Length: 474
Ligand code: HEM
Image 1: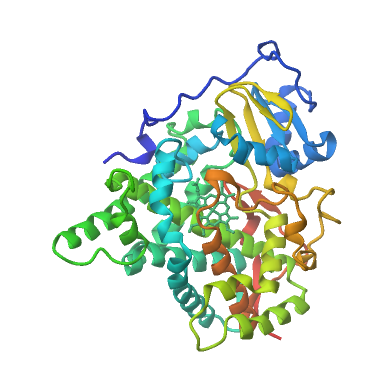
Image 2 (image 1 turned 90 degrees about the horizontal axis):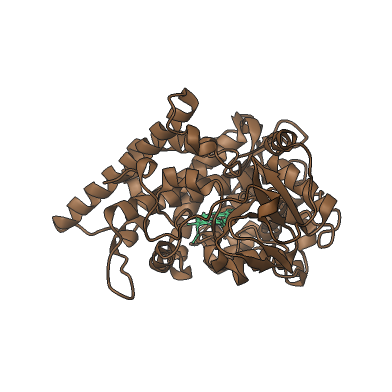
């Protein structure tokens, strides 16, 4: 067993091309961009990376270039640029800055792996996320949400983000491991939080050189990564041992991953691969949804009209006493609009960093081999060209099938191409259930009327846990 933190880059992966460090190494014209003193730009970038990217978009338009820590970056904001990078020319790229640090926790899991490992795993992991399978998860999602809400009383003071983190963690952890996770739940949640926090400054090249230092901040990163891997290992070893004694593998996600076989050669995922995939599903499957739902609570704080529409919708799309129906839940219009708008303004995955493996043309711009390339949900979703009053939270804009009027690549909260989110339907199903259950019973109403400060890490988090009061549905 090799722990992800210490694992070498798999030999199957393409070699990472060297970064571009000097203007004279670039034979083509660079798109416009800030050309300030290097230190000044890094400071601006670090202070608030999403705001930095939005500023680039609003100042320079569809594409910009800049130098960060002495390395060349391109940022594409137009739908055409987004589609070229994520779909049409996706094979000219590998995952970019930040992903290597993420791989220290998630190893060769889907989020961090590269070809050819990624596609093999993607094919094997798709079935547990097919519609008929998701339909099986809906009842568990609803039961766990109801149990969570049952622990609240109107007037309780809570931290909305902590509550939603706990709730979404319980959902994904139960669906993944069943009750075996219970005794580790607190530790796993704590160490996931530390790991995600340390994957901060996702796009600053060179940060990983401190990871092996004894500085406590960085040492904790390794400690948390090792803890998570050890817990997942333990659960997998026990499950496999029980199966060898004749017990069923289980119909939770772990059981499905252990039973998955490659359609080409019939091979199974190795122990380390299953471990990395389970950690990937826990990480990508709770933090994202919890954060966007917390932002939704903030934006919807004073929108009683939306909450009562959601409550009415719950009766129709999630009727009491009936098992939730996947298609109906996902098609609930107010929940859909609230989620779409929350993911527009606070996309949990707010940037997709890539690295050009070869010279490639993106939206008419030649990008040289080795350049860093970014597309950003946060910046593109605020484009004035496609969204009137782009900074305003207006779920109403999604009425009348507004989404279908947008060009491909204008709105992409779940990414696109072969790296598109594996859990998009899972996330929508879960969030709609949570919103509708909150609307019909109790919900956390943030204490402060303005929006919390953002704390962009591997995901777009609200800072400070978001103090809130539990209020009853009106
Ligand atoms: C609102 C919630 C969510 C959002 C906005 C979201 C968004 C995304 C995005 C944008 C990517 C692509 C990253 C890239 O292009 O580099 C991604 C990948 C991924 N997501 Fe999600 N996600 C969410 C929830 C989930 C859930 C609930 C799961 C699993 C239960 C999940 C599992 C994954 C996995 C496995 C990948 C890697 C896919 C691949 O590269 O093949 N996500 N997600």
